[in-house]
Image 1: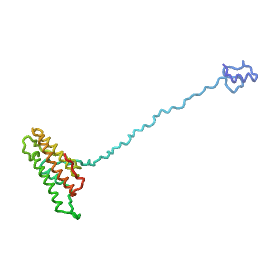
Image 2 (image 1 turned 180 degrees about the horizontal axis):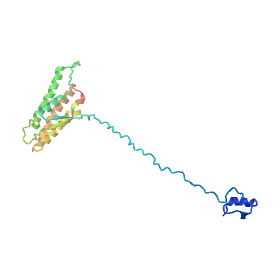
Image 3 (image 1 turned 45 degrees about the vertical axis):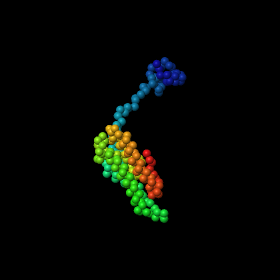
Image 4 (image 1 turned 180 degrees about the vertical axis):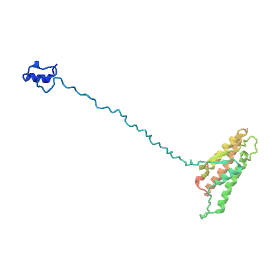
Length: 216
């Protein structure tokens, strides 16, 4: 079949179509058969892209360790006569008694301190039945033990809270005693004498009001 465009042009120009063959027409610049279309595909780049095999940096920095010690909130008191005596006496708040002229009376102040210490000693003279190093009651537990007291109670002279813990300790070490309830009640009553003495010193204006104790 003749290439269409050159054939039309040849015939339009008055040429005899019979003179055209399958490839071209006479005096035609354009071949009847179109030249083959070169459809060469562009070269395919089969080169693999470079692979980054570099490992990402590893952070080997250890996180900061908090080496701050937690705040101390309790103090362990060995449940022996000497240890408890030292603790209770060391807690006595400042005592300052003044005379009518507003002058510090050191003699009276020392006397008030001695009165508090005497009540503490009387209390412990009874309580020594329940210390593991001095107990003479057969049914009382005599295993060495310590009592954790709140540091704030010690620093603020909260005898009422601390003596209450001592009463609870009696219930623990005398658990196997048939008179455990009696021991608890007697211990509580003995503690009242200490608390009342401190309150007297406060009421005598020899101690700050913040040291008033609550009776059980």
